[in-house]
Image (cartoon, rainbow, N blue to C red; front, side, top):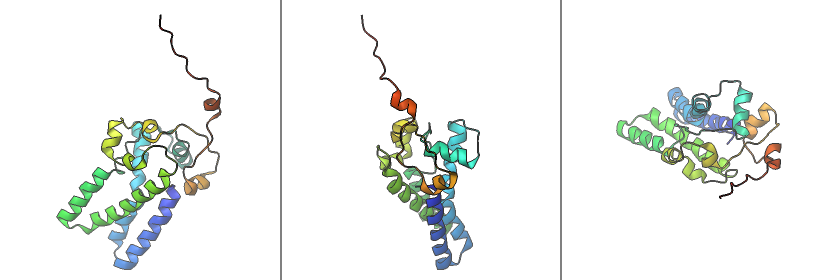
Amino acid sequence: MSPGGHLVTTIAACAATAYATGSAPLTAAVAAGGFLIDVDHAIDYVLFDGRRDLRPQTFLRYYIEGRVRFAVLILHSYELFALLGALAWWTEAPLISAYLLGALMHLALDIVFNGRITPRSIVAFYSFAYRLSRRFDARVLLGITPRRDRRRFWAEFFGGARELAPLPAERAAPAPRRARRP
């Protein structure tokens, strides 16, 4: 799902939480789970992909155009959610439960919307162990290749990823030659 879509749905979830509970901390926890969970994309972008240009448009275009090399995404994992669920149950901590509620909403939306444009199993993708077994290689995990998208920032922010035409080099690239065996 696009960052804008997550922002809109998180605002709605936060409004419902604030109305139902009147609690600012619970509302903030839902916001952290629903929207701020995406901070792991920035961590991957800098630490694992080695990118340094943190301008929002450059960062967003890098993802939208499928240029991502590594998908570690520690916060987007069933394993972390299970751990947090057990911790919330064990400690009866409402803030952890509220964070988990926002994060589960975020993950469900990612599965539904990102699954439509991903040729690989989007459900399996959200397992940290599955990503680890594929060495976090985004192209292997998601079956993506770099694409060009010329929309403006706000269209990308609210529109998110979509099927795009291949880059010109991809269309014209000859098939690799096999080495002949003597």
